[in-house]
Image (cartoon, rainbow, N blue to C red):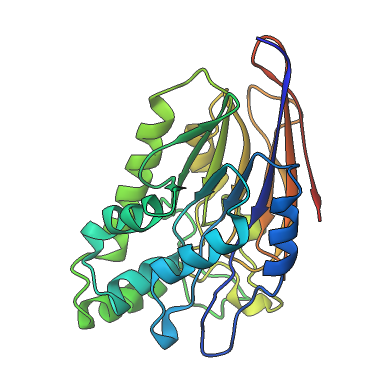
Length: 292
């Protein structure tokens, strides 16, 4: 094969249609970028909508399509607020949520990675809402003694009240099983891993307030435990969102020096351009991102 370059746009955590308005006000900018012809795809890291005013996931997907219809491929993962919209406002049982969201995406030609991986120009995108494994279940000074375990208990009670029918812990376990299965299906192709939740403790601060440190049920996992399973030799980067902060970190791995990029694109009005260069052997020889 000939050397090739994959170039795509990355954004996350728009929280459209909420009581306080939307976090993302650059839809026109995004539309212009998509119309430029420069990009092969757009990837959204989850939390398209804010559910507190009755928004549906389908409304979020429609807004995404309106901005990105000029690119050939649209990909996304579910965020916790997207799931909340599905079971609170539609309503759909949690065990049916992925199929329900996949149907909404399919109607507009978008690809929900929670359902199945997707390949663009030889690069495989494997994604899911979470790969959470419970290893951040400990309190810190910033979390004021509350642990993720406490928060999950609170969330479980709320879900039971609205009839979700699934415990949050069961959701996380199923997400992790699915993510691992999709990774195991192809251990050769260059793969970009995408989760809504964050993959390392260094990313668990939320927004501008440190009091949310490590307390949230959806914050992710500790890389010492989970990273060795998820960051396979063919995984070239891990992209995420959720915490409303922008991060550029590196994951230490046994097979890659100095490690793989960990990028969080959920900062205020953030849009990233991501480039992946493949050589004639189909191997990634360069990876980079910049804010646009």
